[in-house]
Amino acid sequence: MTNRKSHTHETAAAKSGMSERTARRIEHNGKLPWQTPRRYWRSRPDPFADVWESEGVPMLRSVPKLKAITLLRKLQVDYPVEASDSS
Image (tube, rainbow, N blue to C red; front, side, top):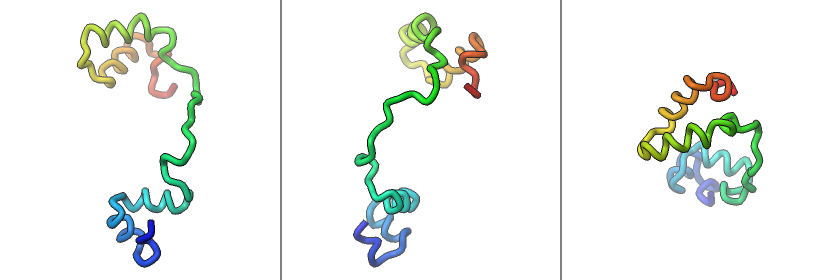
């Protein structure tokens, strides 16, 4: 963001080829996105752990072009507690 020294956020971001929000986030954080460590832990249990191998994988194998939202909605109908929007 060397352009930031002589330009506004909006102009500097445009010259750098990024959105203004991204420019502000990078300036505030002080690190580029690839410089921050990745998070590898789960924040909650996997709601599909019990049904994925028996339901999800066979559906994807039988219809490879199946969209994720279609698979999610099917699992929500079949297993409403495990795959609810709130879990």
